[in-house]
Length: 195
Image (cartoon, rainbow, N blue to C red; front, side, top):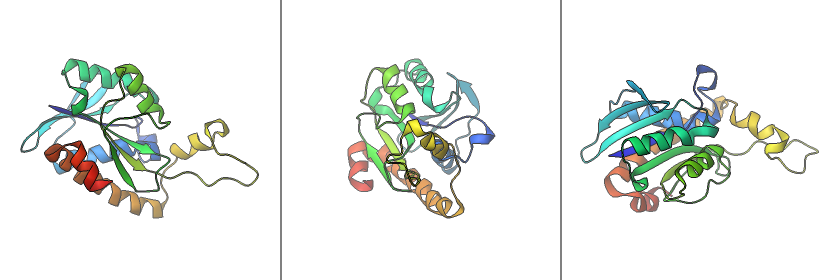
């Protein structure tokens, strides 16, 4: 069984935030495959389903993004999921808006949710799909936009503009294509096709 986790913050107030693109992608994928999120387990809303070849467990952690690791580790352990069969979907500030990238493993890239997962699993060896949300425009007078300025936090917890939303909707559909390809062909083939 493969475990696919979308990262986001729970609650309506966060639903359309840039940081919630993982939830939105997983919701789209779930609808495409008629997989309802009917149960709660490991602090997550989960749904079971299958494609032609794979049994699937979809999960949206009900923790906040920055502490996603506890929910993910609980599901991995409960269902005995090898880390190669875990797929994390999350936003990425360092990719242009709407660009998607698949990775087989690696560092958190500064994403606190992925950092939490790596820390809790004690491993960087799990696939992920990153969706570009771009970076905020640097205000005049600031030499650097980073976490300390609070601008990044406000940006990721902000909603996409009307124009950005058009790009993001297309990216969400592309992520479902990438997940389907990953399930059928594996991470390396999916990376070759979508990166």
